[in-house]
Amino acid sequence: MSERYLNLCLNPSMASNSDESVEDKLYIVFDFETNGVGKDPNNKYMPYTPDKSPLPRPNYPTQLAAMCMRGDGEVLSSFSTLIKGSKRMDPWVERNCTSITVEKCGEEGVPFKDAIKMLYSLSSFSDHPPTLVAHNIAYDWDTVLVPTSKEEAILSSPELEQMREWARYDTMVNEYTKNRLVNGKKVFFFRKIDAMIGPSLSDLAKHCNVPFDTSLAHDAMYDVSVTAKCLSFILRNGKRKYSKVREGDPSVPTLPKEGSLRN
Image 1 (cartoon, one colour):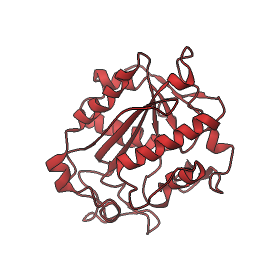
Image 2 (cartoon, rainbow, N blue to C red):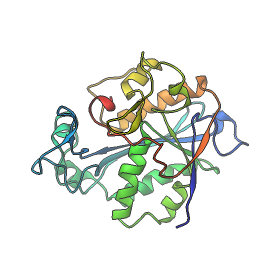
Image 3 (spheres, rainbow, N blue to C red):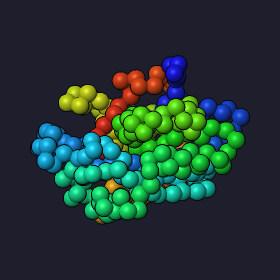
């Protein structure tokens, strides 16, 4: 497959279709929950022992939720589904994501490839390519979606071929969060994990005047709902700038979604 470029929109009001108004642009906000990153946030992110490590591997998807919305905030459609395949959750996930279990994923989940088709189907609400949005999108895309798609041999499927060309926007590290304090905090470079750290979803929600219930966090549909409302706030208040980066560029942060780094 030839090398591709993607639009990493530092402000989501700048999408790839200049003939669309901001209000008419289509955004697909999505979030994966997984069986865990395999590292203990209470022990300096040291790996769990083999008997506690997530299976079949860390960062295996257990839930996918997505919401299709226009730039004016109108929600067109949404879905949430569990995903089959997880064999063991790591201890952090077992403590903090009690609504998702290995047994429930096996009984109620769908195959990963079907979940991706559900995500792609939300693009049918527009004739123009949408912008994919997530809080820490590098994790959802590079750490969860791409490796699992390779394992399932669907990375070259028609759906993913098109999705790889869509613009992507990260509500965590972007032009808006880089240029202001968000709940009293700045975007910064964290040397220990060699990546930029932006506001947690709860901090961003507070800044955007979006209610955030910690008891509901880590459910993909709830996190998507909060992220979508934060996106609407940024669309109303952000600057119109964007840049292009190579897909897989190491300057684009890939962060674990657990503990204080997420909510």
